[in-house]
Structures are given as C-alpha cells and as structure tokens.
Image (cartoon, rainbow, N blue to C red):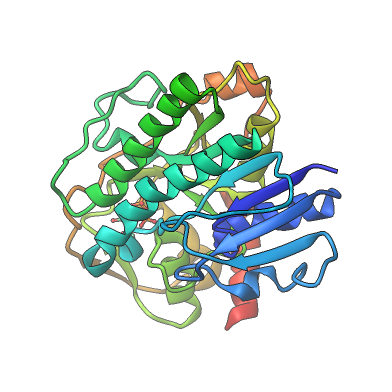
Amino acid sequence: MTSILITGASGFLGSNLTIRLIQEGNRVIGVDNNYTGRMSNLSRIINHPNFTFIEHDIIEPLTVDEKIDQIYNLACPASPVAYQGKHAILTTKTCVYGVINMLELAKKHQATLLQASTSEIYGEPLEHPQQESCRGNVNPIGIRSCYDEGKRCAESLCFDYMRQENVSIKIVRIFNTYGPHMDPNDGRVISNFILQALRGEDLTIYGDGSQTRSFCYVDDLIEGIIRMMNSPRSFCGPVNLGNPGEFTVQELAQKVLARLRPNGKISYQALPSDDPTRRRPDISLAKEKLGWQPQVALDEGLDKTIAYFKTLI
Ligand code: UDP
C-alpha cells in the first residue's frame, strides 16, 4: 500500500485528490490548517480506516513517524480574494516556508514531492498559449505577487532541493480548475457566476469581460496530477495541466445565464489590478510525457458544477 501525505487536504483540489486516492486503496494522511479548506469536503472518507487527518499549518515543520512514499503539496490560499489584502504575507509564507518544510519531510522519508504550481507564474503572458519554457511576466510588487512570486520561489526551492539534496520532485503548473468542492465564498469566477444566478442576483463581470481563461474540470486535473506523481523519476517538469479550451469571461457569463437564468443581468465592475488578460495552456508536454489530456468540456463540467452548487443552497 502506498502511503501518501497531502497538504491542503480539506481544500478544493486536496479533497478531490484525497477521496480518489482513498477509493483506490492507498493510505492517505491529510494535512490542513482549515484556513481556506473545509472539513465538510472530506465527510465521505473522514472515518475511513486508511485515512488520518492532521490539523497543521505547513508554515511550521511537520514530523510524521510512519513511512511516507509520496507528498502532494497543495496547501495555499489560491483564489485572489483569499490571498490578497490582509492574508498576503501568510500566502507567501505558506508558499515558501511551507514548501521548505515539506521538502525537508520528503528528504527524511526519501519520498517524492509533487508541488502544485500555477499558471500565475506566467503573470501577464508574453506568449500565447503558454508553454513551460515561458519565463513569465510577473509584477513583483503588485497585489497578486504574494501568490505569483511565492509559487515561483517554491519552484526554485524544489529544483534546488533536487540538485543539492537529491530529493525527487515533480512540478505541475495548474490552470484554472473548477468543479465540486469549490469554496462557494472564495470569489472565483465560476463559483461566483453560478451562485449569483442561483440566487437571482446580477452576474458580476470585472472589466469588460474580454479577458480569457481556460477552465479545467477537477476530475481531469486530478488525473493529470496523479499521472505526474507516478511518472519516471527523471521527469520532474514543470508541466502545464489545464484545459486548452479558451473562453472570455463574457462567454462564460452567457453560458451560466443560458442554463440558469436566461433573462438575468450582468453588472460590470472594476477590473482588479494585474488581472491577466488571457490565459491558455499549451499541453503538448503533458500529452507526450503523461499521455494526458482533459476529457470534460466546459459545457458538461458546468452542468456537473451547477448540480453540486444546488446541493449547497
Ligand atoms: N472575475 C469576474 N467576476 C467575478 C470573479 C472573477 O469577472 O465575479 C474575473 C477575474 O477578474 C478574472 C477571471 O474572472 O479575469 C478569473 O478569475 P478567478 O478569480 O476565477 O481566477 P484567476 O484570476 O485566478 O484566473
């Protein structure tokens, strides 16, 4: 039985990953400080004999007595609403101190560490679509930089632990992901639009809605992450994981309205600073190295996500 530690286990991606790995017969130790995660996300497996939950903030070192084979480091506030403002410093600490603590744990256990990096490291993209070779165009002093630069530093630390300490590392750059277990309050565009439509409120578009994103359904993303973790040691990435289907925010709003409130209205609000104007992953590397590509188109994924949010209302 593979023994797997997952940080951010009660969050959106962490809980989906934890549930799948438990269902596949693995031993899972879930770690979270429950700052942005929710224990209700883990209710299906919380009492499973192969699952243990540790409430812990990875900013602090973590000791685990039992043997660990794999560490998925997913812990971090991930939505702009969660990481900006008064939690900015905490976000950088989680990225930097957190990955150091998890890399030290990986070194001690001779475990492989998979780091959840992000399309945000490309900043305002200079190339489109974004390939892994793209070095990024990030504002180092802006309101998003706690997350962007934190994640960039985490990638750098992973590579230095590999070169200096021979730790086995894997880096995935995750593009916008959606689906069941998204936090209804974290301000992401898909959760906001669906909840606003269900509540009969206007949909809030920031800016004119011409900015684009490429939305990946969570089951596809989790499949890619697991394939990356179990790929040969020599392939450490970074590798883009996302759905190349690209939509404007305006198009997304129309899709949600068509499903839930055909006569609903849109309220246009100020665009947050440094909000990337476009984003689409080039997934050639994931296709070649992992045999992975998304299976769920946005229309199908939106239907599943709407069904999930209806259960919360
Ligand atoms: N956005 C929007 N209305 C909302 C929430 C977000 O128009 O209620 C926009 C946001 O400005 C960005 C895009 O949707 O251009 C995606 O935002 P999200 O926070 O989901 O992800 P990220 O900015 O991290 O890609």
